[in-house]
Image 1 (cartoon, rainbow, N blue to C red):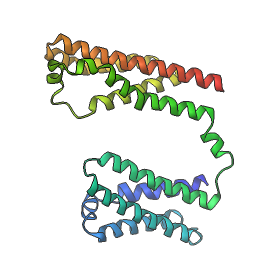
Image 2 (tube, one colour; image 1 turned 45 degrees about the vertical axis):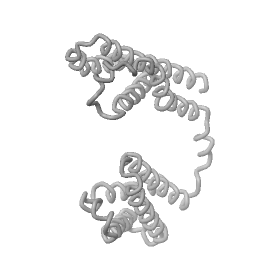
Image 3 (cartoon, rainbow, N blue to C red; image 1 turned 90 degrees about the vertical axis):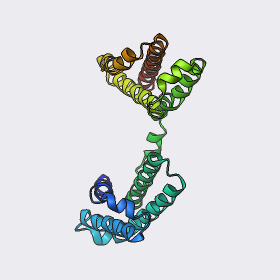
Image 4 (cartoon, rainbow, N blue to C red; image 1 turned 60 degrees about the vertical axis):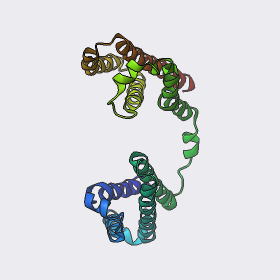
Length: 243
């Protein structure tokens, strides 16, 4: 089962990223020929990776090819509806392709016994809760926490010229890294991360010459780290208790 899935995944990665020129991606939005050519490449790659057993997987190859055509057609349509959400559409597109490959593997070998029990185990649920706390709940909490300062003109002027939502994404990534460090016991990595962020922020704080902005950044950094450390240790304790 794993061998088949890895072969299907290899064909997908080669077809979607290695053997698909940027020009095809652009032209297929208005010319269906390039979309069909892209799908044909996928079909040929699937045939190649499944050689010499490809005759017995003929229906599977055809099904994956048709599914790929449908998903990419939907993506082209979605791009016209929501041109300002490229990251979301890319993630959704790849998720659907991956779901097709997993479904195809299960179609050939059946669902592994005990799979759903593992996916819905206490350990898995705790990890999902921790991820949601870090990636979804904490940004909302921090936004509410800082709302009393966000109306100040001096701070708004300092934030002008920054990338949209960049601070939120950086915060989510740093909190995920901290939680990961705690799970593997690499606590010194947290100090390294804090030092690295301080170095990168030093220039902004030095040029700002604004006590309010400096305090704003420090409170934000320490709040983010505190949340991550609390969630990280709670996750570690929960996993130990469950196991």
